[in-house]
Image 1 (cartoon, rainbow, N blue to C red):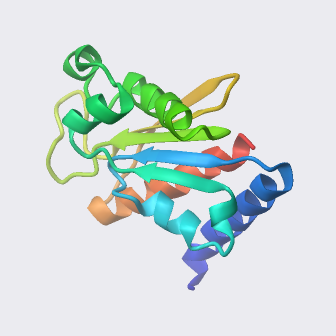
Image 2 (image 1 turned 90 degrees about the vertical axis):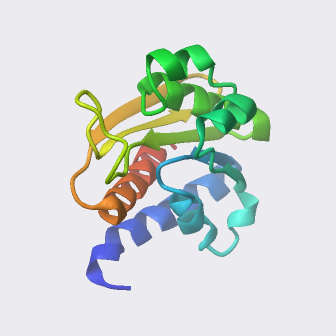
Length: 162
C-alpha cells in the first residue's frame, strides 16, 4: 500500500476497533461509489462482526423500491440530493437493523451533471437511532478520483460519528 492509502488504512483500523469495542454495526447504501466503501470495510479481517449489509441502488427505481426514497424527492430534488442521502441512510439502517446506516449519492461523472449539480457533487449521510447527519461535498477529478475521495470522506464521517 502506498503512502496515499495510509490515511484510509488508519481510518479503517480505527473504525473496526471502535465498532467491535462498542458492539455496534453498520450497513451501507452507496450509489455513486459502486460498492467501494463496502469493499474497503470488508477488506478488514473480522468485519463480518460489524458489517451487515450493503446495497448499490444505482438506478432510481431501486432507490425507491428498496430504500423507499419517494418518487417525489427524486423528481423534485434529484437522486444526488441531501434528501435522498438522508432517506437512504435511515432506511438501510432500518432494513438491516444496524446501529448505523450510511447513505452515499452523487455525480461521479463524466456525464450526469446539470448547471446546478456539477460532476463531483456528493452527499453522504449517516444515521443512528438518535440523529442523522448529512454532508455535501464537491470533489474534483475524474470518475475514479471522485469515487476514491467520496469513499474516504464517507469513512471519515463514519469515524467521526462513532
